[in-house]
Length: 453
Ligand code: GLN
Figure 1: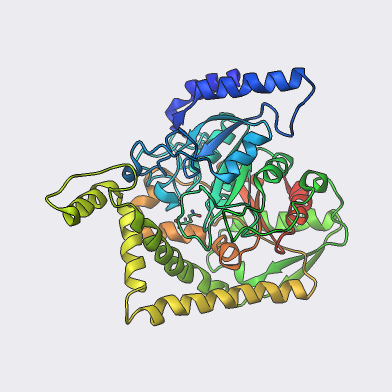
Figure 2 (figure 1 turned 60 degrees about the vertical axis):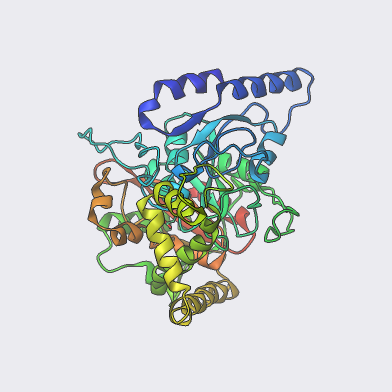
């Protein structure tokens, strides 16, 4: 713990942590030492963890990297982090992220962007770590924690993992409790770990996952032996390669990476089959209706009365208006506008209801592939390696949204998805592949992931 606290101090220029909690960390570590001395070690005894700022931490600032939650200190602990502490893990601090988890570059944070510890060969230009869990991914990659909590609504665990050469898993919807996690789009949000290796991710997920009476969408399926799955043979597993993920204009490098992943799995004894997921192309536009719609509803609670920031006004309506105008950043406001628009009378059927229908079709595509005997699907994790700070933000919001093209289907269908580092691009930046599994069969992903990493 002391070594991590020292590295955090030395690497503050990465801006990975918003809040550091050294006192808490040292006292939790001391308690771990005592249990170890008594021979009562728990599963994660003394393991130093960084926590994405989206998870409520009792008595510790929880601001979702937004100004509107300024200095908010919850009186409760999220279920996911409580599970980690119950297993003996140590909290190092709160990690930077895109504001309310909206973004793919960590540039929408009120606390400024996170810098990716990686650089292009021969260049010192700063790159983004991906988002929204950019702080989590950068901190793991730079060794500023042994593992981190993260969340994924449309790719926010898998894309930053791919951009930083780390491993990230978005579990099946309902595998981890959402209780105490600041809501973005409730039907898509899932917590999961970012870690250095597939094995570490497996160990962390085992601790984070649980059924929880406080989240009725958490599911009562036993948590698997994830660590035991790592290293198990993949012989005979059937891996689907969906032709719709071969996008027009896909870079040769990404395609080569994908072929390499296929070759490795084949060599390890898996069977490769071509599959079709015909509704893939509708996933991204449908996601950018469903997610903002739910966000606009979830964010209605930030009114200057209940949490964080309050900007006074002449009456209560102007206080709401002043608080929300000052408290939310541009991207969050854009999502609220889109969300309220698609939920408005007259547009609801044209946009929201249609997007929900597309969601059903996307899920059915996967169901049919699994019913035909496919155990997992292999795709690229992202369309490119990490890009430069400001590069995409200056282009357009839609350019930024295109980053999620390979990841959003998984959230729309509620499936587990694992991003695993698979190679380097021509400027020596990490690239990742994605494995998508059947509901609650995370074990299969850990088995396959270890062959690739
Ligand atoms: N980049 C996507 C978005 O901005 C996904 C974010 C996420 O998974 N939290 O909505």
